[in-house]
Image 1 (tube, protein in one colour):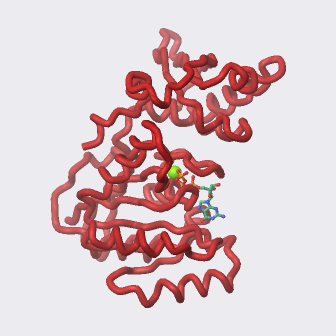
Image 2 (tube, protein in one colour; image 1 turned 90 degrees about the vertical axis):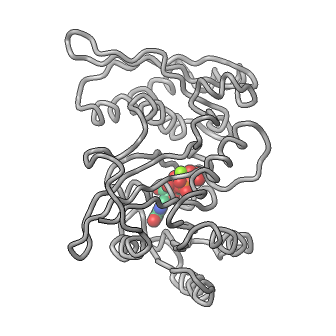
Length: 300
Ligand SMILES: Nc1nc2c(ncn2[C@@H]2O[C@H](COP(=O)(O)OP(=O)(O)OP(=O)(O)O)[C@@H](O)[C@H]2O)c(=O)[nH]1
Ligand SMILES: [Mg+2]
């Protein structure tokens, strides 16, 4: 069989997390229309077979490439480096709705050197202007030593040709993860991310980038109900009021949407209680960053 690691990288909002979920067939990584949604390296595993040969593809979703300053961004950048470091293959994802930018071409040249195979994924073909999409493809075609695959991660279009391209880059090897595992992330992490996704959905403007989620209790009661308590950590007092909303309305919407999804994930009834706490400067505080799941030690 063939086994290998594939890192998914690209600028914020290109559709990397949507793509890993589509490829793995499970929601391993949260998605939102806002840039800078993903903050960690998140592994998603796909087992399959091509032409009678079995494979295990170990994908890493990564944060969007960003050069902002600060400890959280530093952690995010190191997550990308950690994913590309020993990948057999890199998928460089581009939002095909926009004209390909100079820095995308620079990134392609850069990442070409970091893996034996670089596949450029021109994504969002379902919504991109056709003429622009074709001219983007024409700009990519002359580049040496890359493969180009147009996709729609959202509509799951062209994933088969992409899997074929990846398969060709994989070395022979043994299964690394058991077949029933589709992510390396513990359930508490996934639950925290679901809460953050719903907060991203219901909050406006710049607030979402300043929040972190801490799961403070996670236990199964005797009656089979799962009790989850979580804090939404924010940086400012006025943000706390906005997250709670008039009469607690916004917090309730976040909690309800999160609870429904967590129940689906666990296939059990869930009692979810959320609090909002202000911890100014948490994004620069190493201890807080570690507590909220952004620990550089985890990046091997
Ligand atoms: N129409 C369409 N929308 C897409 C496609 N892929 C992703 N999206 C949307 O684009 C937005 C960003 O998607 P994400 O998957 O969160 O993007 P990302 O690259 O992981 O973003 P960061 O984590 O912020 O770096 C979301 O609103 C997705 O629903 C696609 O193929 N077609
Ligand atoms: Mg993402």
